[in-house]
Length: 141
Image (cartoon, rainbow, N blue to C red; front, side, top):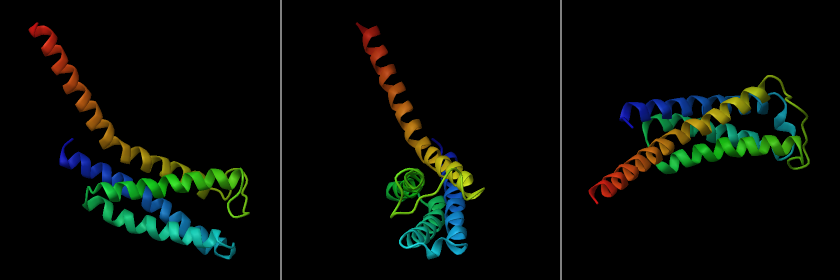
């Protein structure tokens, strides 16, 4: 993958993660701050997501990409938990609050997909090289 393509993918992931961070900050500011432990979690999610989103376009560090994936994936898991078993006793229903819940699902999923692209490209390239080497070896017999 070219450095330009890799950077564009990181920028895409960063924008999506920043939107997720903004949504968590917005919800924290508009009522979630008073929910015990959940409010603190929203504040942490917002802060960490925005901080990682600011750094992500400028470095290809694996640890930073894993952190971004953990934030997006963790937010999605917490979303599902909040609609099923609850999080710290807090339960939401459906896609409430609207439209933040739906937008959050979309941008966090997009973050994970964008972060997975470089790995898929490397795996695909490795498999092609392996397949080409096997074909060459069989043809040489």
